[in-house]
Image (cartoon, rainbow, N blue to C red; front, side):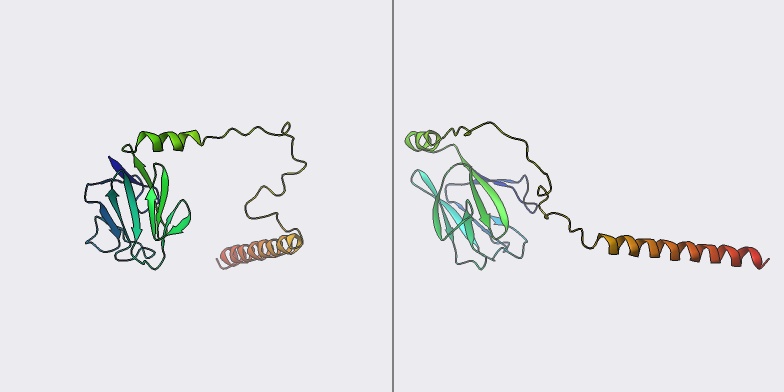
Amino acid sequence: MAVLIGMSADVKGQTHEISDVGLTIGRSAENNISINNPTVSGKHCAIKPEGDHYVLRDFGSTNGTRVNSKEITEAVLKPKDLVQVGSVEFLFNSEDIPLSEAEAIYNKTEIVEAAGPAVKPQSFNSISPFGARRRENQGLWVTLITVIGLLTLAAVGYLLYELFTRT
């Protein structure tokens, strides 16, 4: 039995079994898997069993179909392939693969040893995915926040003065 498992927010956790006639994916309600997402075309793609394999075909969609981040028009799917329909991701899984293909997949496992011991980095400044903070504007921000704080204190003081002097 082959299945597509939803990975993206639109389909997260949903499991769709691929029948003997296959299934279609798209934004239209006529598809077996209907996804209301602007990056998915009305009739986006289909997965059909062909012999011992499952074949994914793109129907000329606007945003394309990808398998493991590679754009495709047609691809034979293997277990644990990541299928992207527009920006929506599914994980393809199948137990029905020939023994020779399963051995080929698992024999590709490679162990890589590090060249030397791990060393502590000298600085963690570049660890942020947004880059290091720029320090040239720090003085401007401190001044701006101080001025806004003083203006707020003055406004509160003025309101308290008006409140207690009018009685």
